[in-house]
Image 1 (cartoon, helix red, strand yellow):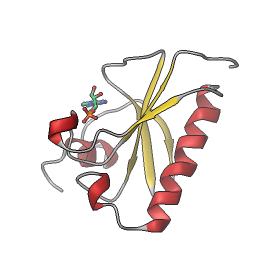
Image 2: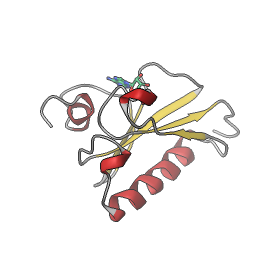
Image 3: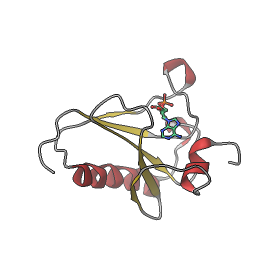
Image 4: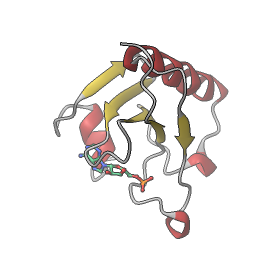
Amino acid sequence: MSDCIFCKIINGEIPSKKVYENDFVYAFDDINPKAKVHTLVVPKKHFDSLNELDDEKIMSEILKGIKEVAKIKGIDSYRLQVNTGKAEGQEVMHLHFHILSNTVERK
Ligand code: AMP
């Protein structure tokens, strides 16, 4: 989507601190971190929110991407947050999983 900020990050039009990338997902550090580790994992294909996600391959790739980011960041303990819908705090309308951790056990 041409006016989507996360699509622009994925295609390099807007810079980001990339953590991980494969054919299906892109992960980058949140610009306004709310924990010691705060990374966003997003599907490269645009879905407005979790409600629109209908592709099982992409669902599994997102989960694999989350685990890759945890490995890269050296965290065994973390929380996932997926704000879904404006009324529950979703500000960027491109599906994204927040990975949040304050317990960096290894590096
Ligand atoms: P949400 O409220 O779930 O839609 O979260 C959107 C998240 O995107 C927030 O935590 C923002 O800090 C983050 N964000 C917005 N713009 C950028 C950007 N250019 N680079 C990295 N993170 C961003």
